[in-house]
Image 1 (cartoon, helix red, strand yellow):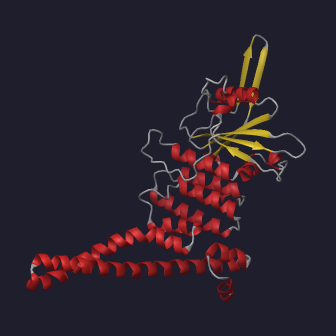
Image 2 (cartoon, helix red, strand yellow; image 1 turned 180 degrees about the horizontal axis):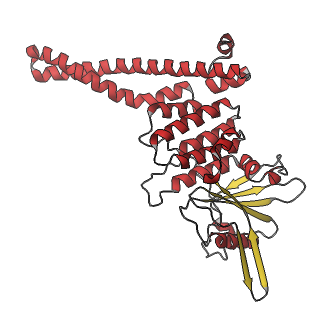
Image 3 (cartoon, one colour; image 1 turned 180 degrees about the vertical axis):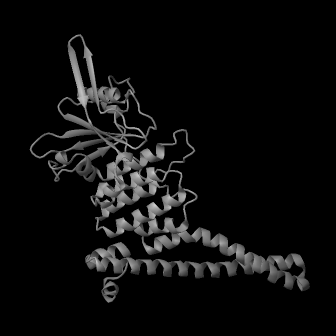
Length: 352
């Protein structure tokens, strides 16, 4: 069974331009499997045996091989094995469709996949649902008939662009945040300024809603992937807002500023050093003066780096204090605020 690489970063210039969106949805469903089922299949979620937990897999073509030589076929994007209270495990095949236009053969492919899954795992019951993230919604049922033989399948579908933005905004369930982010991403396609606005709103809301650490992680990672926060063109402030939610102050300072500050500082220092060296070079020779200037410039640059990093730390701490005040006003526990903001509990108490 192939485990999904959660750190996978996919370029939009690849042969399949939708792959990074697929990765975003697959990761969210795998990491938030229980929350996804609570949103898409609440009747099933109510019967989950929480003592055993849901097993989430991707790449289940090996489950439906006809023989050892058969390479198999991909039957779902994510495959959930759900333990049910008082019963056998139930399989849930989840399919994410990115297509711009409807696929007339989609329901037939779901039917064929379901038949093969049933044959491969006859002692377990299998169901399926589909998430459509593109412009068009596909069929949700299929019937096969042949001289008196009749077989049919009907499965649940969820068309993200068809959801109301206002209703999703008010729905605070963990996976509703994922659906909300997916809806806003579709709404702001090719509109960078609007995407930054929506991404910032989502990042702030996740920090304020009181989700647990696991829920925050899969929601924030989905927002990062679906809005391409690691791609070029996204503002440094927005990248920092995302990182602030996921790593410590020290890690953030090192990750965001080390390389950039070194490059900027050394360039500034080199220029200053060259000017200073040129003056000394009047006596010691231009060549030797430039060498001296570059060395002194590197030292100047390093000092400037340290100043810029300290300034960044102060800015981030100020943001953390601001966030802590909001959380205090909302009545959140001091321990939760400390965990989220990395501030000491005693300091947080002094903000009251």
